[in-house]
Length: 609
Image (cartoon, rainbow, N blue to C red; front, side, top):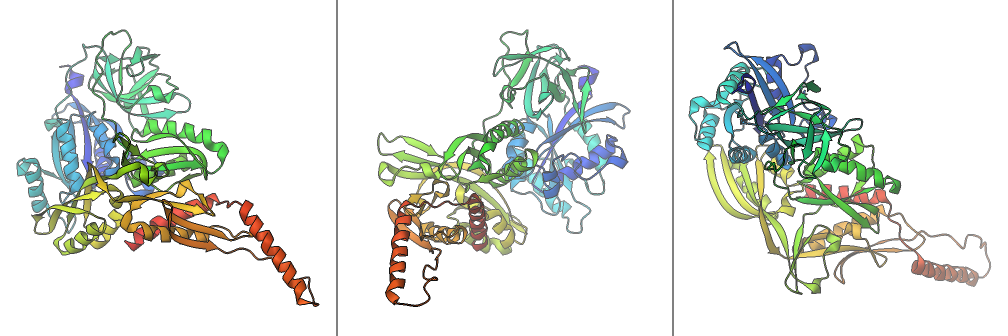
């Protein structure tokens, strides 16, 4: 093994959300002297304003560090900071494939939580060395002994293998780095093989094209080498290679075991797919590296530009954003109410919210998102075939299918015993079916439910935090599609269906949703010279109605006296005119009303539950 490979350590930090991953990354960067103290700031790896504002990590961030250990040797440390929210678990899974080890960070005040367990399983599946670390040991509410035992029970390790640090004040960080050097295995020596690199992330530079983030598995790569992207078969000449510091840092070469970047003048974003293998162009019959399982979207929403001329700009923006966010999927969609746009798939509601924000901030686009929904599966009467429906307006008429199946998840909840009654009531209201309940320790219980995905995605986590006073945590995994009494609820304005407002709801909640929709629309649609009937319907049956009253013009104002029959004639003439206007008039729903309606409906639903 070469000296370079022997002194390389690739590792990432994984944890439940808000357990201190980014803060620990800051302290490790400070300890290695990679950033001068004058330039140091909190969450230094989080380069998006959105990440810093919300205090969460959205994208995995890599940085190359040099560290002189206590044995006098200098080591190359490649650190990847990962997100903690369940919506961005795909980012974590891709980061794990670029490492040999994972630091499992556990909050000493909170203990092992739902996402902690999920991250452990992902690390084990990737055959990584796991370094358990307790954080926030300096806090008054810390329970280091109890939480250490929880970690021991989870991993089956020895208590002395669980390190303790305070990422806030730096206690124990130097010892942690020494343990990383001692316990993390170096990459395998594969510099004598033909080049193979795994793309685990990428970004788009307007001037230089695609910047591919890679882990070099085999061989050596220099600027000027010809490479081939195996998924497309296209060849390029490498212009620059390097490693990640706070900015891209060019190097003379990348060797097997290195984590870095490749710039090869790739202008088509579709040529550099996440999970693809970059290989030597001269090599024949090179086997692609095992990529990543394609993520199936859990939430769908239509994105439409407010200005129709921005359609092409939105298309280009989504293509570039997908390069940086492999979990995003999209396809063209047309709506009679909103025009041309895209049907997009997301991993969860936070993912949807982040994508909307990034489109507006990074690409200066004003967009409207239709009401988020989960995919459904419909079994047709003809032939018994199944169709997956990701748009409520595409659900076929009731007489043409046998049943609708909705996605269910296995929901894992951790909460204090004093809140268990409120938690069980909350999940039962969301149609959850209890599977298991057990004591984790004296202060916490773990519950397992089978629950409809659509019921827990919106507002559920906020309500869970409320009823548990902030101590409740959750995680979920897809279970499958199960039959359910779902119906398509449509909004009809003066006899015309508005496809963008169609939703699929459970039969028991259809009237509640229909009543809320028509009442909100009544306040949002501007009045016309004729009455506007707003109806919520299931099939041909109207279940709720509201009416926008007509504007009234005083046609009798010019009559200062005389026979009353003159006023009656004018009023009858106006009445006939309004009737004729209603027959030929169309209701224009302003796009601002769609946006206000969707937000109000979500907020009202969340507050009510």
